[in-house]
Length: 468
Image (cartoon, rainbow, N blue to C red; front, top):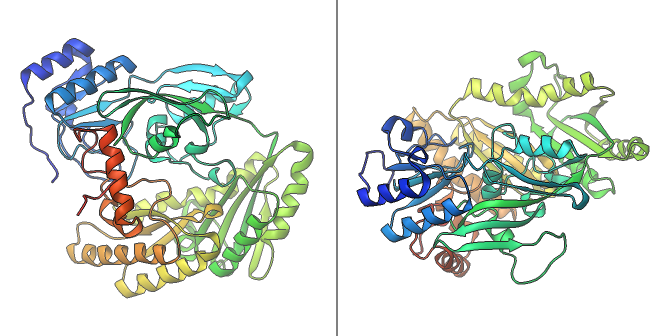
């Protein structure tokens, strides 16, 4: 149950936290605490206390103190996630990592950067670029989202199709378990098989197992050249066939973004975007690599993208043309917010070859439940953002939308897909998880969680449904 009312914590507990962290790191004023009770899911619950530790030792001591007094604890980055994972549903303490925003080490010789969890994705990209590198995960919210949040949800972005998610781009972690145990996982090297892979386990765990206090990131050299293409198709089937052809040939694009016909209708004319009237699907494609090879790579991708149902393929030749092509894709989010500011935004994944079945099924569900559904996303991995344009203030419409969403998830699973690609589970999808994960596997996951967090204090009520 969401908790919004104030509930006093033991005075001895608050006093001990103030002594450990410093009075300025402990937030007690209701109006200040309020702002730490939400994330981009639009859920809100009032924390009883907010703390802002400055280093690993302070996180460790705070977690141990919460265990001593049995106080729930929720770690928080910048609150950009959409699933309610950072909302303190049980009250207790919100541990904000905003002060742990230091880049500890940049090691170009070994392609490594060590950072604290409160550093923004953009700050990491800028620091890496100064040495000729980048960190591949690139969520849309990169300017404000934190590395800790990226790791918590394993959130990636368009470049994942070629370069992978945070799980493929993090070498090791320093963390504090839910029981207050200090952990060091992974290694400083790109190869290493000593022990179990706890690094990949913690990434994507949404702060339910441990709180990350430091991450060793694997950097990638910046490509010498990048080319941008926009391909238009008569319908989604033609676009999906093109996606399969593109992903089957040797040149892997660094971005392969998809928009369906409803998305195109929504942005046509918005912000000056001009698209043909017969365009039923759109692909945004980026190819990168060595300057001497990129032209040949682009031609290979164009050849794969062309085919039955392809209306046109435009290639940008300079920065202005690149911006013009991406303007179409970037116009979609503001257009959606304008039409349905409280839309339901899900991110599901299906095998690339089954995307036409997914889009057909979504179109059928849209008609059946009289809910407009707009689809776009990262086509190269089959990661589609399914937007149900429903109004939460309309009870009858929301009832239809919830029934529709339930069938959307069933459809995804029938197509051998998964319920979340990069947005995480939080509370929004928690009760659907048992549809994808078998009871025995869920029981094992609960046992793992209990091993890390024996008192059940870290982010309670999130990620896993209760055992039946």
